[in-house]
Length: 99
Image (cartoon, rainbow, N blue to C red):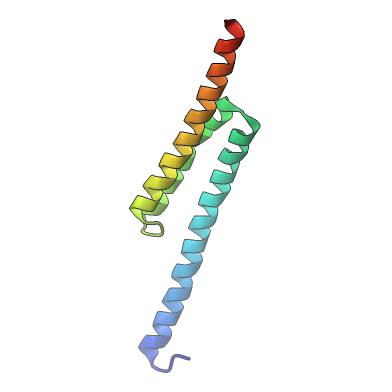
C-alpha cells in the first residue's frame, strides 16, 4: 500500500491510465472482430469496407502509445494479408468458373 502522497497519486494515475488503455484495446478488438467475421463469411465487399476503419483505429491507438507502433504495423499487415487471400480465392473461383 502506498504511504506517501506522491505514491498515492501515482496509484491514482496508473488506474486512470490502465482504464483508458483497456478501453482503447477493447475498441480495437471489437473492430477487428467485425472484420474477421466478414472474412470468415467470405464477404469481400464488407471486409474491404471495414479494413480502412480497422487500420485507422489501430493507428490512432498506436499514436497514444497504448500499442507499440511496430505491433500496430504487424496487425495491419496481417489483416490486409487476410483480405488479399480472400480476394485471391474469390477471384480464382470466378476465373475457374468462366474457363
